[in-house]
Image (tube, rainbow, N blue to C red; front, top):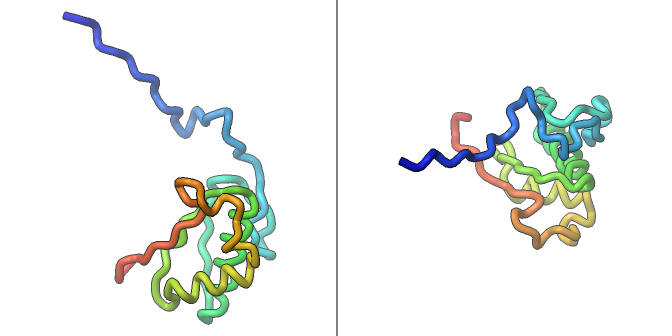
Length: 115
């Protein structure tokens, strides 16, 4: 019987991939400033405009730093609202130099009701 082939094991969170830049980066959110890669944040908002302004600034900062972004859009905003807000926060959004790369630098998705 032939020995089993060994496959390289991906790094665990305890053993991060040393090629990744895990340092602080601009969050795009004025009151937060820089935060480390992988940081989780929660936002409370009063109005639809509060949500759009903050989320668009966050994603604009991510795109400007060449990050891959996924915006899960759900009530009270829709896809058109999200794209309009992002165009205001990042005027070059539609001309982003990596807009044709795969995977795309920004993906929008609709979140199921109840999430």
